[in-house]
Amino acid sequence: MPRFMVVRNFTVGEEEMSRVGRKSRVLTEETFPEITWEHSHVAVEGDGRVKTFCVYAAPTLEIVEAHAKELGEHTIQSVHEIVGDVTPEDFPG
Image: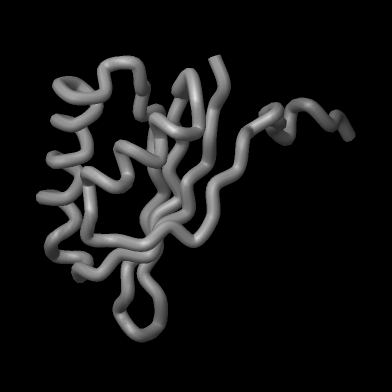
């Protein structure tokens, strides 16, 4: 199944991200069961704005975008299809 990296800029602060994360999980489980939310990295910009880097497995980009629209409280900076993963172990010394 294709995997996607979604880079988001949130309109809520860090203190509200637990609520947003729960909403995202409920959406993937109840409204978009064809999506698997693998993980997210959360960063806080110098001005306090929250940015996330979320990895989803989904059959299509359109389903990922529909989930994002339903989630709200953010804008999408970019979406990238993931074509592979590497770790330091893939590059022996």
